[in-house]
Length: 114
Image 1 (cartoon, one colour):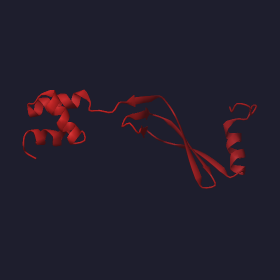
Image 2 (cartoon, one colour):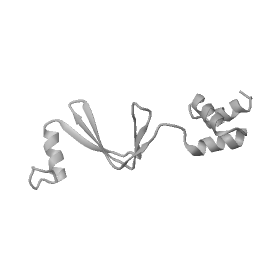
Image 3 (tube, rainbow, N blue to C red):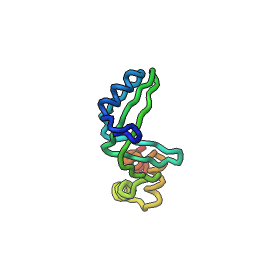
Image 4 (cartoon, rainbow, N blue to C red):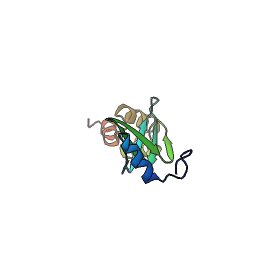
């Protein structure tokens, strides 16, 4: 139900909105990712996404639990590069940053095959 709208059920509300030229549909999304200016990400798994179309202008409403992914290289990736390339943590992390997180490229670079 909608606050302040009495006992109008969602189907009645959609019918009323359509009369005003407003369409509302659910978007079957598995994941929504917001890339923030600082490089971190907000990830919402299994979100409820509603698309509202008002005369060609679409608005997306996303509901769900957001998890923040901090900017940086995951520790597991650093450890893998360290092990595969036989280098210390500092060199592995630098190679991953240089190669934008690409593990294979970082390993190849460190092994001198690039």
